[in-house]
Image 1 (cartoon, rainbow, N blue to C red):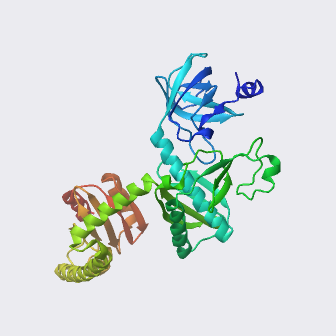
Image 2 (image 1 turned 135 degrees about the vertical axis):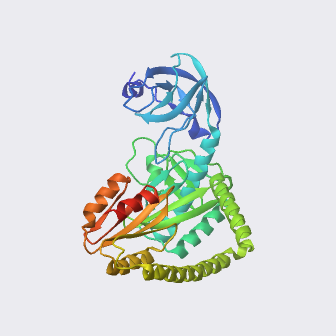
Image 3 (image 1 turned 90 degrees about the vertical axis):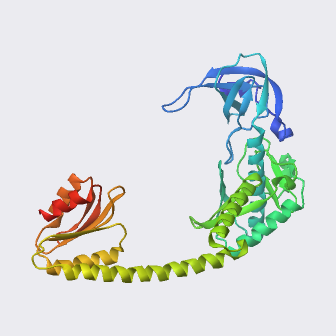
Amino acid sequence: MEAKELKLSGQETERLYDKNSHLKEFEAVVLSCEKKETIKGEAAGYRVVLDRTAFFPEGGGQFGDRGRLGETEVTDTREKYGIIYHETVTPLEPGCTVKGRIDYDVRFDRMQQHSGEHILSGLVHSLYGYDNVGFHLGEEVTTLDFNGELTEAQVKDLERLANRGVFENVPVQVLYPTKEQLKSVNYRSKIEIEGQIRIVSIPGYDICACCAPHVDRTGEIGLIKIIGCEKHRGGCRMTILCGFRALSDYQRKQQSVTEVSVALSAKPERIGEAVLHAKEQQGRLREQLNRMQQLYLGRKLEELTAEDRNVCIFEEELDSVAARNFINSAMEKCGGICGAFIGTDETGYHYILGSRTTDLRVFSREMNERFQGKGGGKPEMVQGSLMGRAEEIQEMILKA
């Protein structure tokens, strides 16, 4: 039966997750099972309808639950006309009773992210008057779009206040107000919704229309971490991690801090200073290296004579500005092609060619064809990259 027919026949799916968001297993009767119409690139499978389910369907910026029905895998859950479809790998017999098991680790992770989003969106709305105009709960991060910009100081303050809401372990309430009661409820997301409106309330922090399952108390969120907030379409996009995602992120970053601390022989709390010091040292070393390269290239230039028509040098490392200066000076002494190749036979070469007499666009095209290269420029100077052996490249230039 089609979703619309099932709804009209009074078989709208009973939503067990509305009553208990922590329900992991349940039993239900299979009402229908139809082979899924697949499009190119989509996996084949079946769409199963149950009389009741603990699987939350995709909606409101959140993916559908995964898990198992009996021995078959549920890869996704979707809804149409109030009927919840479980996308399965293998079929189930209509009329049979089946045991459902949701992937609770995934469900709990998503509840942590979604409840954390509500706290932040509620705070942004109450403190700054901005609306949440976009929400996406991804597999790795969650993004929130607001129709106003936030400063760095405001973001830091929001993170502190949001985590205070977590530490207070506030009960998360699910309300089903009547149409009359709804008139006196000041909630977010006042969009046109058919039927009963479900309100998720976190006293002191947020009250919003929402269809998704949430934690029972804010303490279950564990931690709310804002990892980014940037300008986006006239407002801002905030990226957050909550709960175990935030913990994993902290552990990864702590590991990185430890590795950098060991590498720089600096205490973890002083690595910022150590990195800046290392950067200054690197700058001084770079200046010294450039001076040495200039001296080295200067001697190369002194060795050139009027008899040297075509000249090329190969260096594993060479500053591009120094290489260009060498080419410009060499062109004054040589009547043919002057080239500088930076790299190795194994990794390939970046090249700069210069000439007062040869149209290098033609020559470089031939060279690129021979050595799998690419690049271009003006008749008197070209640059690009290629793969080849130094002796073969040099032979082609010297014979030009």
